[in-house]
Length: 128
Image (tube, rainbow, N blue to C red; front, side, top):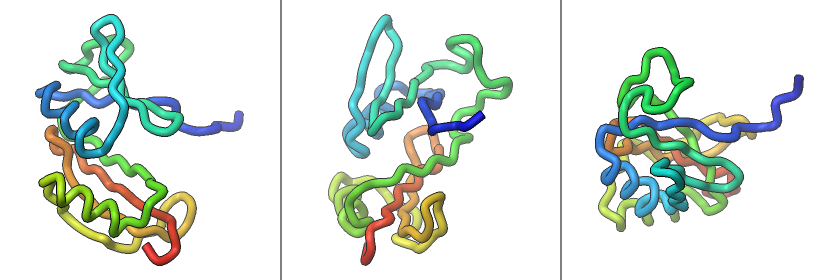
């Protein structure tokens, strides 16, 4: 077997409106609603949004709000992303800080979504 990448992941939220505002308005993901199901698209991946624990089956065995730790990478330099998020009024917990990611050295910032999931945003650009 040769895994090519991540197709999608699921976030379970206690507050759909706040969740969508964060991922659409703060992180600029594209919202898609079909058959009363909510999905967020970015790059070639998507996040499915569940509005209650185990809303759709099959589901994780121990669904808990705020238990995810996700890292998204961006094209821009991290200083630009830091400034953009601060201008939108969202709190940044840490960074920019150097980290070692899947593709090597990167710079990251950390923030939390409305359900308290840890969101890392990183850039591999030189000088970021």
